[in-house]
Image 1 (cartoon, rainbow, N blue to C red):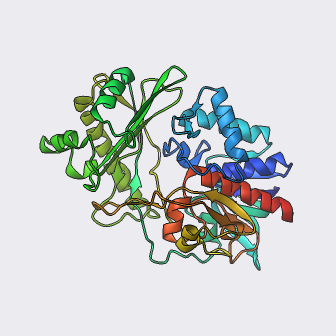
Image 2 (cartoon, helix red, strand yellow; image 1 turned 90 degrees about the vertical axis):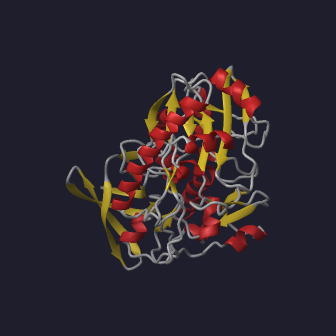
Image 3 (tube, rainbow, N blue to C red; image 1 turned 45 degrees about the vertical axis):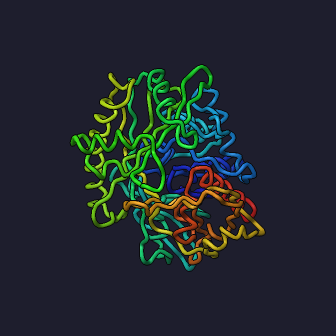
Length: 420
């Protein structure tokens, strides 16, 4: 078997790259370890997408994905103009349709086991598929695995030698909520519209609210969390971060962007022993949080846990050394580049397990990411797209969001099209 491009990882960036290449009649294979596409959008329930600059580039995939999702009543534009509120289950279906329409071949339940390299070029990839080892030839490889697995197996150099980390999340969904009751109570209980918002969109209730244990901000929900801790309904660290959003075409449900999961020592997100412990701990916290919601929030009397994410939400892991290492100074100065693949103004967003240590720099000018930050320094036909890009820790914390990953995938695909 031989392909023009193999995309390893069918998540946000990988799907965008594969779709763009397929639309231009390239023979593309996506190798995906799960039984569905979407990466953190679907397996980790990362919804909604974060809003970014209106001047974004390489947004063809984003536009097409949202258009198709809206046709299925599975996406909305929220009141802040964010078009990225979507249903993660319907997203699996739409991504399948998009790959099929672009004639992209997808291989599920498969992982790479070896990379065959000659000089500075990858010639083929060996995969494990139903206990059989299969070798597949290719001209170009795009690593969109998040953990940069292709780069690792290719012995590429990485830039995160000190392994700076952020806590993981294990998201979940609760159903059976009376959103009319909850939204009426919430709107009156929290008057801070920078934290809590409620809207009627397409005759459905949509809302968002949040709380953290940081004391630098006055949170309306704080007394409820304090009381829950005092009465042993929640453990103190359970309340370090709390955020909820409604979900299009999922009436009576809320998506929880929490809990943060961490231990006294940072989790090594590349160690399955650590990840397994984090998943178990996260599910214990989710149960306590669901009981908290049912006791303290009107409208939750008949609510239940309907979905727990299949995987942890990992914000940062390996980052490859590219032909350009993008820095926080590049980002904050708004440095211009000849071939930008991303234009964004999303803030530097660094989560911490410690009180008052999280960072969200909201006053950001637009910045650009160059294509060279997605080109491996060691292998000439290897590209990366997604959170494993060549960027320092702080810059990566602004670029890891879904719309930027979409743009990276499209930008890499366009570059490959020009050099094939």
